[in-house]
Length: 455
Image 1 (cartoon, helix red, strand yellow):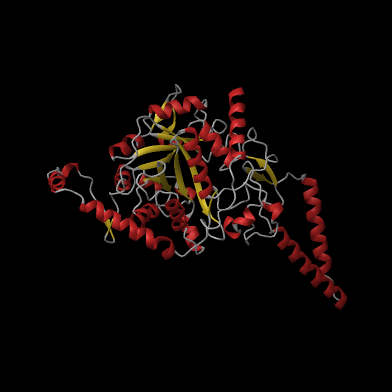
Image 2 (image 1 turned 180 degrees about the vertical axis):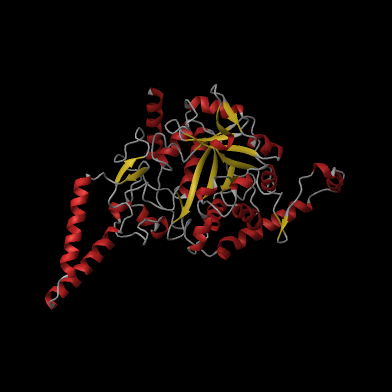
């Protein structure tokens, strides 16, 4: 604990010295053509130059290679979806990925969490990305603000008809006014049964009295009452959780009402990590996820295009790139588009969830089969899977029951990264954090996401 407090103090000092002012010229929204016309042309020219430098000897060697050793290409709509993606990132040992920074200790995706994760010497720090109203990529896990900020207090009237506050409905300047907090859950306050019955009887009595009214004055009064009721109901719908109590999802974590944690843009978080890499002599990588990219498209926004613009401006089109980088998504179409349109050299990760999560229009159960993994290997270097996809439970003696997922993924040529280890939210079958981590490592995984980057 003493070491943790010391580290937290150092991180807070680091963050206090980092200016998080908005970069108006670097994140301004542009058309897709304006953002990528030059970059795509430049990349195409560079690729052509590299290809022209290939010697006849190298070409001869390539032709003599056995066809059985080559990875098959898959063609869809005249577009190659397999290699070349650029070589996968080799890993001598399983990598540790700081899940949303250091949420076990400070609110997720904050500068303080990034600095703390970096101080704990993780291999990668994760960034979930969504868009603001002015098309600026910000690092937030949710497309909605309800559970992670004080938005209901600052902008109480800014909900959509469903009663939720959406990041996309706010400009970056408006989001700067919010305070991020430890994730909360909402519950309905318990109401005594006798009180509930009394209120119901009173409401029924009021309805009965209006139904028997016959005079013009009474009818006018009734109309006014109905109008007022409609207004009251509309007011109640302003916030989906207006009548519920907010409680911390993880009670032992950072207090919800304390601190002044702010939202970071993707550009700011990249700057912070690059700066810490330089000042600390490290090579901590970034692990970026597109959140609900199809939903963004339905709203008229191109999340991927904006993210790739920021990455290009931060040197991720260069060779070498400023840091190691993973790009991940639950939607296979995102991976195809990354390759088809952007020809990224980043390592690609297909996230695999449960069908009930409704992350994308895809059958994740089929994706986890041997055939599904073989197909996934044509467009990804790695998969990101849920802990129960690797360990289904324990036997009568308390030993882990491993699935065939890791074995089949490795057979298909895929790395396996597992999400998410939390000491305060373990699977029912796991006795403690370290045992679960050991079991996963014994299963042969290649990396894991953790809320506690020091563990």
